[in-house]
Image (cartoon, rainbow, N blue to C red; front, side):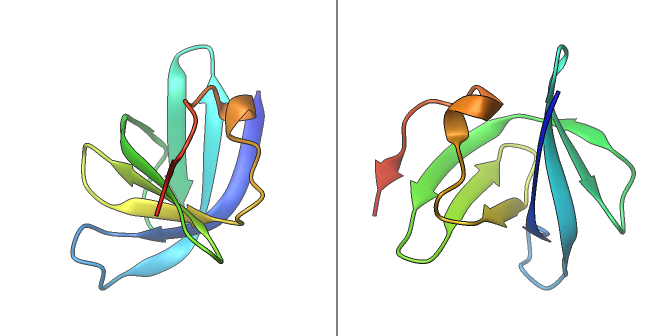
Amino acid sequence: MVELSGRYYDGKRTLSSPARLRRTYDGLILETDNLPPRPVSVAKVVQLATTLSITFKEGGKIELPPDTPLRRLGLAPLRKK
């Protein structure tokens, strides 16, 4: 199991909390301090200058350090912005 830490923003971008994104045999699991662990599907991955932004189909996004090893999460290469 691979786990990476970052900041989660809800779909309205009003709430921010520490979060962990894990790769399990069942897929990606998002866990935050405010919500129970839940499966998520990735809609978009964007590499910005100071952060890596992963937006979820279910809403919300997680921001990770820019040098996050995406391949360890089983995600496709980035779309640079």
